[in-house]
Image (cartoon, rainbow, N blue to C red; front, side, top):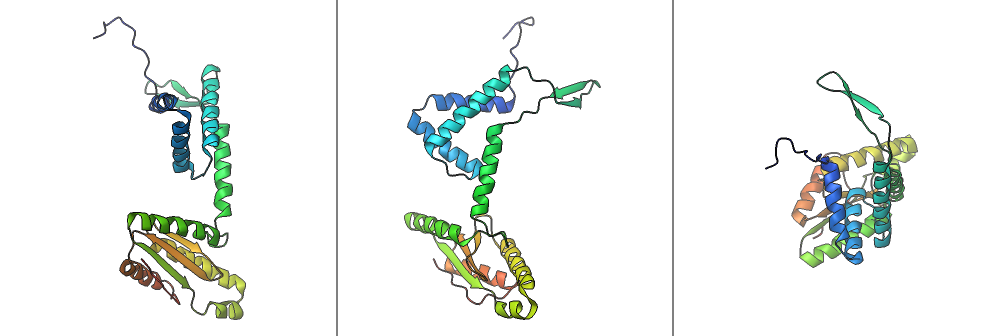
Length: 226
């Protein structure tokens, strides 16, 4: 037990303690293991698929930037009131690396998203379906697929114009999103064609979901498979 007059070292904030622990742990790993961990870590928090070398470089840049910021005397940028009435200052730091990651994430999301409905597009459907199918075969788990299109959608465009047809597509997309679980994915794979990818879902469950979707709009075809 320390004596009453002994100085107590200041405790690091929780975020700094976590970062210090993570940095020490990664430092003890060889380069290959460090790259694999960072690749999975960055993918989990940003949904970006970067090469291991890119992840290592990004991590090193972030640590360097952190050291530079900790050594530089930054002026306070925001004041908060304490219980004694005096202001407490907090430093708000900008991380260029975080901004670059955010911009890259937005660009990647735009590349795989249908701009009209906000659903994922056909390109991502092909990639995701192949991955989920391989996972389903590897672990013996069911995979549900529902393919549907809008009943008499061409008549809407012909009689009311394409703006009204676009509105119908957006409503259909919103209906799909409300019906799905967080683990499911909805895609626009054609003009009025949609696909639902349902991991851990057998044919009976996929059919039940397609019927729930039918309460919002009538699908022309529903092909669940496991």
